[in-house]
Length: 377
Ligand code: UD1
Ligand code: UDP
Image 1: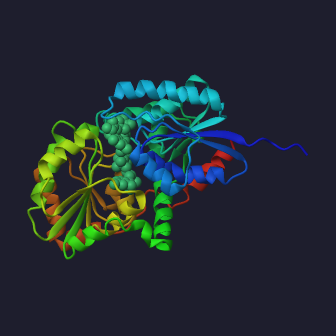
Image 2: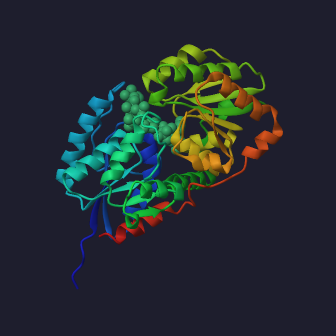
Image 3: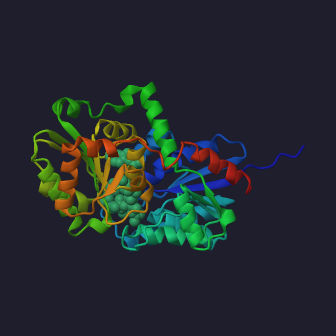
């Protein structure tokens, strides 16, 4: 009997959040004999990407190592497009998979399209309706959506957004967000091996008795004013002696400089290096409130019943807001301070937000994606 060749799928990613949201897909494809899964990392991020590769046990087949300090979008885009195109010429994939809305995802999709290789989009259909919030991600994901073969929408809202743009409804599938698969997996790993998540033990002791607020911030559209306002809000919240803020700081020099200038030396603000995924899951668990401009954290916090204040003007993830666990607070420091204080001082307001909701998925997204891909090969 003739054996059918497994379909060669090239999975492309380059940043921390893409790696977190794609490792469940990569591991599911690798475990499935119908597929020959190859991984190409652009390494748009370096240390933060490697942290995820390590924990997920993924060794890339191709590593473009494109990260440069403080890289500009045009230079990054140019290097990504030619680099990823070259890898596709070597690998000759039957299909390409990209995730989300980074420069790597957009260039991976474009290079595949230039070769007429079908590209499938994980986390399709997120839309804020504003091309400058988030910037440049809103346009990146629209570009990918215009070329994708299969659109793996995490929710009904994202599927509807694609259909409203006249995407063929037969190509749009609601799968849930793979971030929930990743979060459940890492939580299970920590339960089996608690030593994976002990990086915060010393801080937990130092801040014992204080109410922990977890902070992250990195958005490019917040450079030039927004980050300063966020830092100011953190400094003002830290004036309370019943709280401690744990802030893994993104390595982007534009973020570091602002935060170092504004927050160094404050006793109850711990600015630390980016945490690997198990230790960040631990921070989510320890925190009473999350204060963030991150996309992924907006999805993880509701799943864990942690109120999340989102320092953005708009969100492409309205599901957390609708569920009541997330609130948009923008980047005005007065508003941020008021909203945090309300959550700290008004038990009713806190309890109302601190309900576990999983509007983003059930942990089975990767399995669904693999089955949908199997129909295409
Ligand atoms: C990128 C994505 C953004 C995503 C974010 C997740 C684009 C345009 N932006 O933004 O959508 O939300 O990743 O974090 O694709 N750096 C390091 N080490 C690292 C990672 C970054 O030193 O491991 C520093 C470098 O100086 C680098 C800078 O951060 O030049 C910016 O990295 P870049 O990937 O261009 O943009 P992000 O702001 O991280
Ligand atoms: N994260 C992490 N360590 C950290 C901060 C965040 O592992 O120190 C994880 C977090 O759990 C989430 C993802 O990184 O899954 C979010 O990445 P980021 O905020 O960089 O990007 P975004 O989601 O905004 O694109």
